[in-house]
Image (cartoon, rainbow, N blue to C red; front, side, top):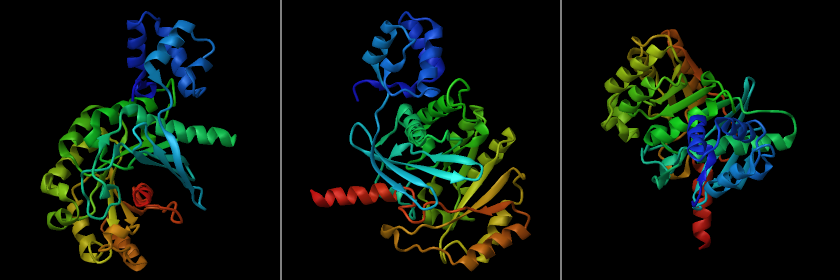
Length: 355
């Protein structure tokens, strides 16, 4: 990557950079508007920006760094994009349609080192972090797609739950949030953004202290240390008691926290597990809720199967009776490579087979 992605700059960073290079702050406001409100794909389209400024931007930045490699469309309107980066690595981005708006799930890393035993994202270890501009551009690519449809639709919600561990790419992820939240640009409300983590405790505290005012999701998936360590090796470093302390700290922000719980047949989906989970959460304020997630089977993890519907419903009812706020995640894209990382892994295996 020779020139940097201009999407990687926050408004303050862009303003400072232009000032440093002899341009007024007003130029930054115009450039920002062209990027995020008028959504140009070339600096030369910024017709009311000084030509010297345009040349300076062209010499130092690029707008587009991602190319669409594959696009899968599901019958429910979900679209999974497989994007190729400038260094030929592949990442996934997903557009989901909800009654409340259009949500995009973004990727933060090329691969993942967390190593959850059930997850398709971790089939390939981390190659590198995405820079902030590559994360922002995922949103822009989806918005470009919506613009082409000509129906006036806009991305309204963001979930940072794609390939990778967001808190393992902390500063780039934070810069991404600052860009998409900025009211002069995409202006996506902080309450409409959720960041997910497998539970890097120190970063949960730091994230809370940054006061970004976005929602947080924790990949919990088990009610006790023994079981969680078996399926999520990160629990060896950050056991549940430490994780719960960090959750309580985050809840002081009065922001919503979601505890993600993938149901695995015969592993963590029985009534005893639900009762143990309810006991674990009994001291957590009402700002926390459990999101029960039906499992999307992954060929490489054939030791895990999807829970029976009766067990899903039974788990849900047990939690509800114990006073735990919970829901069952609405599934999207079940007729395409739905699980996070599945499309990327499948495509890479096919390409390797051709070599």
